[in-house]
Image 1 (spheres, rainbow, N blue to C red):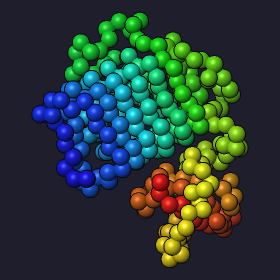
Image 2 (cartoon, rainbow, N blue to C red):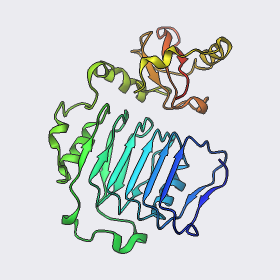
Image 3 (cartoon, rainbow, N blue to C red):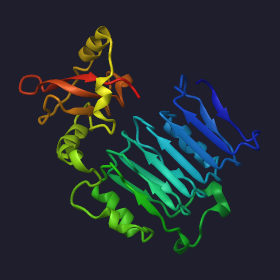
Image 4 (cartoon, rainbow, N blue to C red):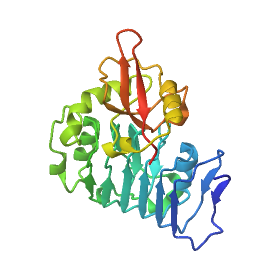
Length: 279
């Protein structure tokens, strides 16, 4: 999409749903005082425009973001009217700062890299009376972290907020990351090492059936060659699944998942990856 802009002239627009539009320029703006329901999937607006647009849509009650992949840290997000907040598959999101004083449901499912969560107690100056003056009146909420990998800081923030309705769902090893179940747990050490390196990071949520999709041989070989990037790591194994989080030389590969087909760690400290098709 180009020149994306929804402004206050659309006085009766209550719902916006954006599913997979690819941005072709840096223009992205919403200023919709009547907006109640915001939903975006597989869509990555510029982070500054996105945060400012939320300020300009102060009455959003339901927020849903799926696979919002960004290369820089998100600014603070102000949603003074939000009751249901979902931010899932935030594969590139290591930190979230939220002002959600009325939220009842906080969903962080399948956030693989979330290490810090800030629940702000001061609202945006533009929102005036929508901000809660009495911090004691902040809402209680339930949190969902299914198939997520959250850090101990996130756990502490949730526990110390005094707002959590389901604290038992945070039980686990509070000195390490929690949230993964089953076969994901064994990948956690590898995942943290990958994320700290220069290129790849993370096991994907998508099932192994993704790798079974047919891919043209020429395209596959080209992408395999292109994936030989600067990965300074020491714990890769062939056959393991990874996700690209940061790759300066190939930003088009950010967010892609694949399987390691060659790990030459002793000589070059690089790996070769066969990528899945995008979902």
